[in-house]
Length: 238
Image (cartoon, rainbow, N blue to C red; front, side, top):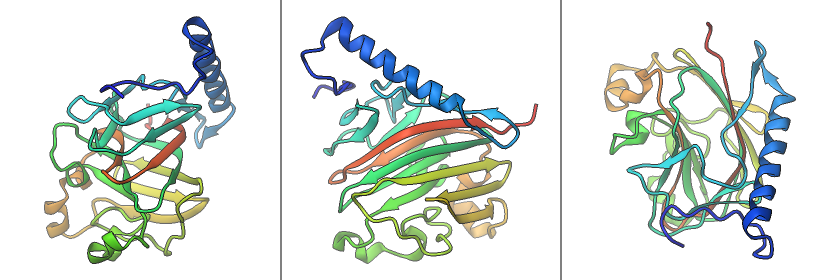
């Protein structure tokens, strides 16, 4: 697949106009579904993914190789391509909802308030860790703050998370000022004040003090992960 290509996942029989119509119909359904729900304060959901293209997304340093859109799913197919796919928009105070499913041996993450100019987006921004804890290749570095559901290299989830590969998992991340709330499959696993960590951690992770940045999806060579139902709502006060 060529760099930056987006596969709609529609059968080749439906080419040209029919493919565009199918994509438009899927986008309409996603937008309609998002409009039916809202977060606290009546802030409406906005879809970040139209279900069949990479519109609204950009690769870290420009490339989107090995990221494809098909059948309502945004997927990383493996290889040594763009490891970070980020929103074109910048977000400050927000609530993010998405679902993810990963294959055994995956190391991935969901980033927030992350700059795209950085070579260390997990430290200059923030990362919700997605990882196959049972994979032997990760055992040596599997500290508590790098487990599934951790605020990467900062804080482990509480309680411990069970989110095995091969199943869809529901994730919600809410950032409001310095407050962070993370729920996985309906359970609160992180609730913290990003400004409350010791100076040594703040120094190593300047992203903790960031108040805006991109939302991004990560994967690494050898990993396979899918995302769907990606939507965001602003929780900023006027």
